[in-house]
Length: 105
Image (cartoon, rainbow, N blue to C red; front, side, top):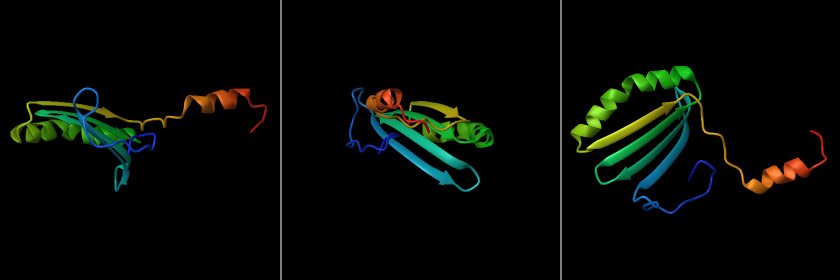
């Protein structure tokens, strides 16, 4: 599934990448989201964590991960590490309904 909870079929996106997304809670690191885009010998990673400490911990280990992936045959390895989880996406009509609603929460 993707970050907004919808299932996407396996296979290349419009740019020829196969994509995967995982959201979980890891012991010692807390909430985490991993997005992977893979094509031939190219790999793109996006790693998100709910805390700055977890993001820094992983970020210090990214060079070793890149070296390992290069040894395994990947020619291009790009990575980004964030200290915040992705905001859930909502359909545009939800905001329109919320703005037009006279209910007070």
